[in-house]
Image 1 (cartoon, rainbow, N blue to C red):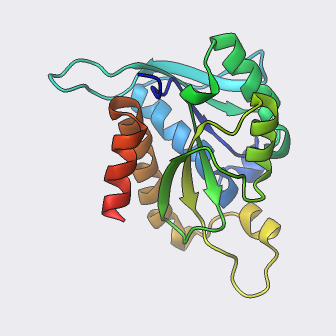
Image 2: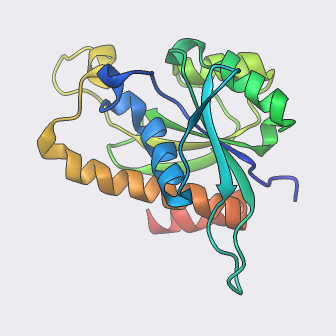
Amino acid sequence: MSESIKLIVGLGNPGAEYANTRHNVGVMTVELLAERLGVSLRSHSSRTRTASGRLGVLPGGAPGPQVHLAVSTSYMNVSGGPIGRLADFLRIAPTEILVVHDDLDLPAHQLRLKRGGGEGGHNGLKSLSAHLGTKDYARLRVGIGRPPGRQDPASFVLTPIPTSERPEWDVTIQLAADVAEETVLRGLVAAQQDLHARS
């Protein structure tokens, strides 16, 4: 199947300083998927942390397809290089990649799934498109909403999520991981239809 997803990428910034920020919801999703696989993300020469395993369960009870997980150990705006090098090393085409990322233009906690399109000012997507040489990869957009009042968007995305909001974000990350898993098991179109029918 031409749209089979073989690599799930979580966009974000490295280090404890950024671990609990809205900009890192993609990383959080991939880390949760690694937990589900019972594996740890380990350093790779491409300047990523990566892991692999069989994700989910197919009808009839067989293990799901083999999938690779990855996050860049470089900052968001230059993350395309590491992810591009990893994809080359694994011989995975851009059309076989699902990128999970934060989106200011979606209401907080809303999820959207699509292939291709613009980057909407997202520096991680810009870097990824430049290094992959195409925009034709799948994206799982995790809405974080616009900042309140006059807060600068850059400050908003890099400010730690308040403790009071964390339980709701934990649910959103679980849902994002569910959608990513369904995309691997059933394909992009079926997962997209299911997700958008629920929203």
